[in-house]
Each structure stands twice: as structure tokens, then as C-alpha cells.
Amino acid sequence: MLENGKLLGDLLSDSSNKQVAAIVDDIQARSDTAEITKLTYVSREESLLKEIRHIRSSLNLQKEVVELTQSTLSAAEKLAEQKLISIVDLHGAREKSLQARQMEAGLARELDQAISSLNETRLGLRKLDPEIALQRSQSLVQKTIAEEKVANAMANRLVVLTSKLDGTVTGLRAKVGEQVVPGLTIGTVIPDNSRLIVEAWVPSSAIGFIKKGAKAKIMCDAFPYQTFGAKSGTVLSADKTATDLGLQFVPSDQQPSEAQQSGSCPNEEWLV
Image (tube, rainbow, N blue to C red; front, side, top):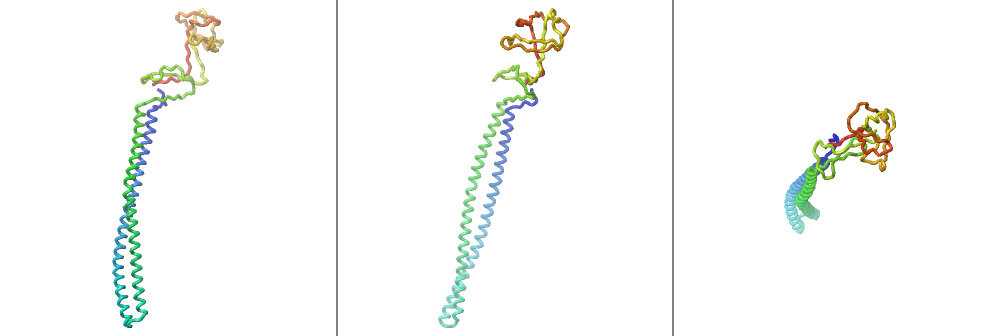
């Protein structure tokens, strides 16, 4: 098993888990924002209610002032007809009555504006809950989709094999769709620019022709040299110990039909 091999299911699961966490954070952030907005609406509603109560109280007092100034004006007009007060006093009474009525009208306008603001605030507060519910529903749908991706990734558990070496994959022992078990070697990576070392057996009658440093050509039954050619090399060593393998010597100008050879080089095996 490659130490740096990665399970595709785990990679996808990690990505989907991060997505789920991000969605959860987004849900929480939206919930916090909505809560702050709701508290702002509630606070504004309470403030407007206090303002409306205050304006109504002031308006009621101002209405009493208007009635009083109106009564004073009526009395002043009668006294003026009887020439008991001066024209200046009469104008003063009229001015006070006019000012009282203007203040009453101003308070009435303030009351209307406050009530309008209160209605808008309450409307916004009523719209807020459905909007929050819709946003939360959409976020939960996204979260469910991401969780399904996690489940699918964990169910697939596909393996992504990576190699520490740059080279060529060879000796595959598994096919697409085939099940493998832990510990099974499924392939080998031959590093780029690696040296091929061949171990070959020859009959004792031919050992005298082989010596260290001699040039050699390597041909294998599995890959006919007429098609694939021969590999050139140099003899690194020759073992003098005889081994009974029943081999026959084949001259270099003939196809090596019975010479048995095996090759090896530094490589990396893939295990599952």
C-alpha cells in the first residue's frame, strides 16, 4: 500500500464535509443576522410606541390649550366690542389662539408620521419571519445535498494511487472493476532512467564465453526480437557455481527459444 495513496472517497468526503460546515456556518450567520434585524425592528417598534404615547399625551394637552385660548379670544372679542380692552390686547389673544392651533396641527402631523413609521416597522417585522424561514429552508436543502455527497463518496471509496517516483507503470495484476484485497500487489512502477539488470542462466558449456565487461544482447521469448529488437548491455558478473536447470545454449544468431531469463530493477510496487 502506498504511504501517500489517497482514498477518493475520503477526498470527496473531506471536501463535502467542508461544504457542509460552510453551509452550517452560513445558516448560523444568517440566523444571527436575522435575529439582529428582528431585534432592531422590535426595538424600533417599542421606541415608536413610546413616541406615539408621548405625542398623543402632548396633543391632548395642546387641545386643552387650544380650547383655553379660544375661550380667551372669545372673551376678548366681547370685551373689545364693549371697548373694555384695547385693540392690542385683542390682537394678542388672537395670536395666542393661532399659535396654539398651529402647535396642535404640528403634533397631529408628528403623530401621523409616527403611526406610519410604526405600521412600516410592523410590516417589515411580519415579512421577516417568512424570509428567514425561506433562507433557512434553502440552506438546509444545500446542506442535505452536501451530506448526500459525503454519503456517496464514503460508499464509493475509490482509491487514488500516487507514486513517489516518476516512471512507467508495469506488471499490472488487476483489471478495471475487479475487486482487490488489502496487501495485494497490483502493479509496479519502473523509475525513469533506471538501469535494467538481467539475471540469466546459461549451460556450463557456454560459461567460458561469458566474462565481466563483455557485451551482451538480451532477447526474450515473450517479445520476439524480430519485432521488438534486442536490448544491448554489459556483463556485470558471472557466477561460477553450476546450477542444474536443464538449459541449452543458443548461439547469438539464433532466436533464444529455450534460454530462460529474468529481469529486475529498482522499482516501487503498488500494494492495496
